Image 1: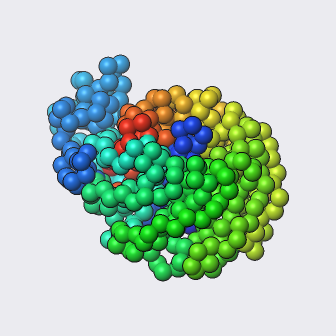
Image 2: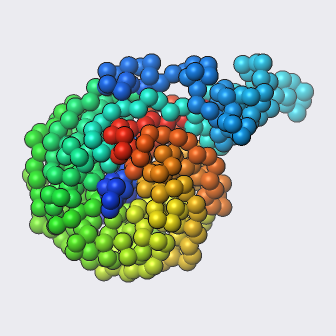
Image 3: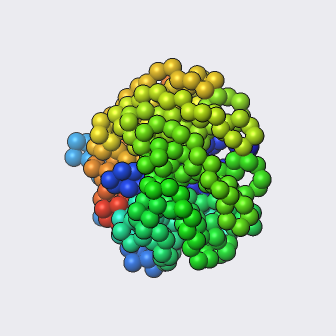
Amino acid sequence: MKLGLRGPRGIALVGLVALSCSGDDGGGGGGPTTTLPTTGSGGSESGQGSTDAVSTSTGSEDCIEGALQCPCRPDQTCNVALACIDGTCQTPGADSTSSGSTTSSSDGDSSSDSGAQGVCGDGSADPGDFCFAMVSTPFSMGAATRALALDTIDGDGNIDVVTANGTDSTISYRPGDGNGGFGVASATAVGLDPVDIALGDFNADGNLDVVTVNAMAGNMTTLTGLGNGMFNAAVATAIGMTPSAVVTFDVDDDMDDDVLVTEVTTNAVILKRAAGVGFSPSVVFSVGVGPAALVIADLSGDRVADILTANGDSTMSLLLGNGLGDFGGASTSGVGDVPLRVAAGDFNGDGDVDAVLVNPAANQITVVLGNGIGGFVGQLPLPAGISPRAIVVADFDLDGDDDAAVAAFASNAIILFRNDGSGLQEVATIPVGIGPVDIAAADLNNDGLLDLVTANETAGNISVLLTGA
């Protein structure tokens, strides 16, 4: 069983990780869909692909308070790594009247500070940069946009987006333009009430396919991709009574991606192995009560994929992989308050994979430290806005440590957490669309830095948060 992932649920950490969770506002939230295999644009709300919807102007009419070269917030604060100088957010130490600055070397010579570590606005992607600045005009997707996935679907190398829309019972696809924007949306019907979405190659043809899990239909829908942004007709497969989340991963190392689904009614993870055409019969693994999300990661340090679920009875369940494409029985332990999401990363710099769970009712995330052999040694709750619903883990500042971004539903915001090697620390709150329930990361504008996208269930759209060097 290989630890190599495809699609927006894959994330490069100590071990490669895939994660997912439901985007249902009532029982699932939007699954953290993270794209780092491709490590993911301004377009108009009507979907005409207008490239000027993401403004590069520094005028206040195009600015977001707290961003670089934009007005300071009312409390005279700015985004992380910026300082409020004469009413404008600037790089600390920069001359407010100059477009650039110089630094003096030890021998007295002056040199440009372009490329300095941890400096925003110098035009260079360097370790320590943590420079989220501009939220674009939102892109309409569909009624109750609950979950999203990011990857290169049409083969042009740019990151595209596909969403699951609960009220419409559709998926919506928009091609990326490589500049941080997306083109015209196209919708395709899937099963009733899709709550999560993932990408994978289920027939080993080299093209990405789409899978949704549909709560009211009690099935999953697959749409095989043609490699050009178009899909074959949807095919439904029974998958239990109430599926809540989906992740794709090549469990048996046969060069096509398999599907793993959490199923609430039977308290199970259901494995559907891809069989070239369609899927093999279900393999069922029992977990805790009401599993809402799952992540695949190497939690035991053996380079073999394991499964960790977040369960509705305030527990998490770990199923260790055996290296032969199968998983052992679950070990279940208490964690947080009714976790809705789960992700993985190394949050304390010890080389072991840890877990982080999202607890909406407690308005927090809970970091659970791993011991590297399939166990856990401590929990740390951290405030994360109001009703957090989704999390993505990635090294946003290129310093080698895993950071995190949380979609907070009732805050209508992204809560950013930075990791300096000793743990996650909240550093910024950035407004997005109304009701964010899912979040994903990918390099949307090909600048070498990860950008963020949220699925906003209430607004029925996505918000794009571009990074800046």
